[in-house]
Length: 191
Image (cartoon, rainbow, N blue to C red):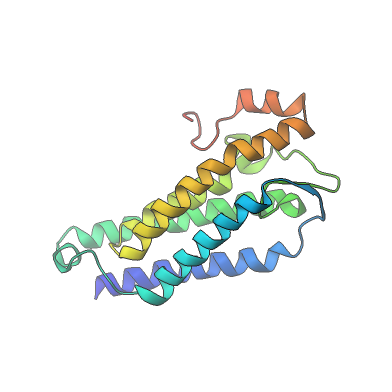
């Protein structure tokens, strides 16, 4: 019962996040130049595959009944739900802070701006930080689909960072290196 409730709660949080993401994507600035488009197809296919696995094929498949029946499961599930909510909230805060400067893939946009406020004060890629945190929290409910999602999406996000930073260094040759010196990539004060 707790496993089912935890999985449904986490699924609903992700559904709301994805819905918000899709709706707000239409307000992004027009792209002037894109790089990496062909490689981004891999990301889109991987995310689509994860969505299919998570929401359609494995909605209630647990790693094992003994895990979901253990006394610690309720605590882990609650912690997982908290991490998902915190991670997705952080990613949404970062996305809203970017406003129209957001893009679904590394690109140069009209009147591109360097955003260094909000969550961007402490990390350069807070959307990725939030998504990875939420994926880690999702793992705690024990559903197989979240394992697939974590180990598929996390490496892809990590691979995007150098491409994004290359574009930003090209657009802001003085400001971005200074910004890099005072902020970390993903984890505040650490990395």
